[in-house]
Image 1 (cartoon, chains in turn brown, green):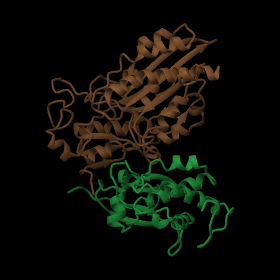
Image 2: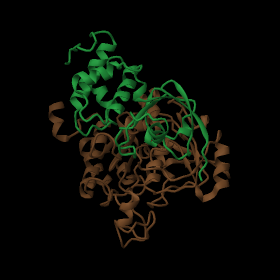
Image 3: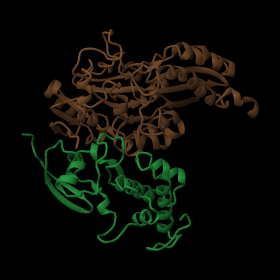
Image 4: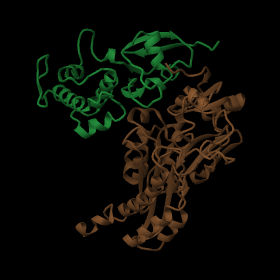
Length: 338
Length: 171
């Protein structure tokens, strides 16, 4: 039996209490929501907190509120199952329902939360291994060691952002409410991430992600595509989130955000800008996809080969845009449909 | 020594008082403290579904659940699917159709299927496949598993007669 290391478990009933507990216990404490990522990592001794501050009992963190037309608010403690099955999310923000519904497996989605998925630890083939495995290879800088085993000459960690929902939330222009000891702040989801495999979250230790605030859906179309080896279980080795604001057939706003190609979600801003003011024709989509793949710089530290993941960035961006434009997935099928 | 709080867990309709270290998972407590060894341990990392139990009717992974988080919730293990000496229609169908080979993944698959059938009386093959997409069978006996869930669904909705020697439309 692979067991958890010992810890004390605190069960606050409010966000304020949770924040105070975190401050009281300092760097030895961690927040836990669903636990579906933290507990396996603790079993492998990637984290060894002495105190866990459990967020599950905080009712104010759970549930989807508001209307899609004025902007839904999703409590960070809402399970991925509940996000994926929520009628307004499915109806108006299908990319978010898709992304939440593609995280891992059904039982895990019954436990894991959307806040946990947004904040999920970065991953790497040299890191997500048992203690014995990591010791045998001399450890890496993300835990217990001092070099990056993917890029030994690099001063930084290259572990991969593995959240499915954050690229979608970023593409939709969602904001996050964070509550800490110094008060609360609302920031774009896009500014929650840092380009470092270890220090990947722009969130203070004592801050709790409490809510995801979505903008009003107004002519917004969105899609999310996920690349992984199996149709279930696996983390993304590439995620493509696309959101288009359309106005009379022309693109008013366009955001393309790539997941699992770097230590943070990465927006292909140059590619998105090419679409603005234009009609999404097959030729333009092909050009945009080419440009969108440029910021995709996967390394050899997840499943599937990194040249393939880079190549699939272009394919997936084109496919997502074509779907939103009402075109068949592949240009090869165009004649049949037309 | 880590603290051992006294917790009250409701398992298969009965309240159990347990005094266990807080870092013991539900899987460990079920097997080691309550003697309910029908729940199997597989990967213990949330990657196989073998240890699935129901919490308030929903499939969850007992290897990643802490008892301290589950007080007041209704836990069902494979031992609680049917009264002692009887089989649940799913268990009956799995036995008849040979939907268990080594049997190790079977408790998790039975419980996940039970949750599905509580939600949908007659799920499609795709819905069953989707519901069971978090449960790995390394004997790869998936076709028979899907057929057994379909047969149990038909029997439970009364469209096909059950019984020990009954044979459903899919048999």
